Image 1 (spheres, helix red, strand yellow):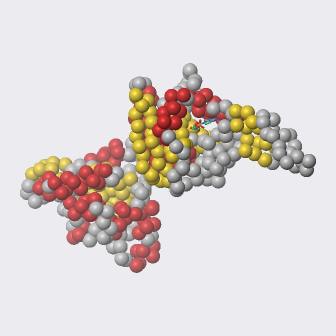
Image 2 (spheres, rainbow, N blue to C red):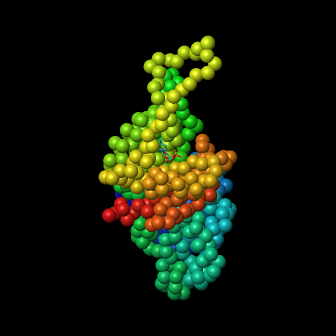
Image 3 (cartoon, rainbow, N blue to C red):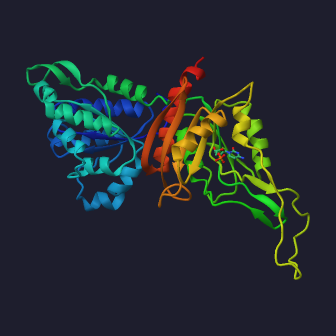
Length: 408
Ligand code: C5P
C-alpha cells in the first residue's frame, strides 16, 4: 500500500458489534503508512472504548460535534478538510440512511457532508436489515453520490442469523481500499495548454484575451490526482502552479506551438485548453509605436497564428489522443461537432461562454463532451459544476476512450 496517494484518513466507527474489528483496522491503516484520525458515533462507544483507538493511533478520538475543547484544537471543518479519505467501518443501516439523506446530526455525518475526501464505507448489519428495500435504496444513493461500498460479506452473524451483512474482515477492507484507489491515469503522460497567448504589437503592447487559465489548471490538477505525469504549457495567468505539475511558461502562439511540438513527442494525451489568439501582428514594431497627431486612425495588419491543436492532431507519428475546447456563444453542439471533424480531434469539450457565471474567468463551467464513435458522434452533457469536477469528468471520459490505445 506504500504507493497510495493521499495518506490522511479519517476512520469513522458506527454502532455495530463489528466495531471491535475497527481497532485492528486502525492498526493496519497505520502500518500501511496512513495518518489516522478516528471519529466514533455515540453508539459506537458502547461497543469499543475511544481510549483503545487513541492508544492505537496516537491521536485523540473525536466523539462529539459539540465539544468546545476538541473544537478549540482542530475544528470539525478543519478536520473535514484535513482528510484525503474517509472510511466508515462499520457503517450501520442507520448511518447509511442518514448519509444517504445528507443529514448532519452528529460529528461523523457532519464531517462527511463537509468533506471533499474520497469516501468508503464497510456496511455491517443484520441480513434482514441489509436486504430491506430501504437499505438497498440508500446503498444505491450513496454509490451515486460517490461513496465506495466495501462489502458486506455473507455468513454467520452475531445475532445468530446467516446471510449478507457481515462487515468485511479488516484485511479485506484494506484490499478494497487499495483496489479502489488505484489511480486510473497512473503513468499516463499528459500535455495541457492553458490561458491566453499574448501577441506583441511593440515592446510594450500586445493583443490578448480574457482567458483566466482556470479550466486548464483544473485539468492539470485533476490529471495529477488521477496519477498522470503532467506538463502544463501556460500563457500569462495569475494562478499558482498546481503541485506535481511541470509548468512551461510561454507568451505568444508561436512559443506555445514550439513547446507543444516538443512535449507532444512524448505524450499520450494532449489537451488544448488555451485561448490562443487567432491573429498576431504581421510585423511587431521593434520600438514603441508613437501616437501620431496628424492621423486619427492607424491600421494594423494581422496574420493568422498557427492552429496548435490541429497541428498536433495532424501528426502521422507520435500522435497523442487529442482533446480540444470549443467555447461558443451559440449553436454550441454544431460548432463543437464541426471542430471535432475539421481539426481531426478525438474529443471536444463544447462550452457555452454566453451563460452568466460560467466559462471565461468563472469557477464553474458546463459543457457537452463530444467524441467520435466509429462513424457516429457520441455525447455526454455535463451540467454546471465547479471546473475541478468538470475537469475530472473530462479526464475520466477520455480515459475510457484512451485505455485500449494506452494499453495496446
Ligand atoms: O478554432 P477555435 O479557436 O475555436 O478552437 C478552439 C480549440 O483549438 C481549443 O482547444 C484551442 O486550445 C485550440 N486552438 C489552438 N491553436 C489555435 C487556436 C485554437 O490550439 N491557434
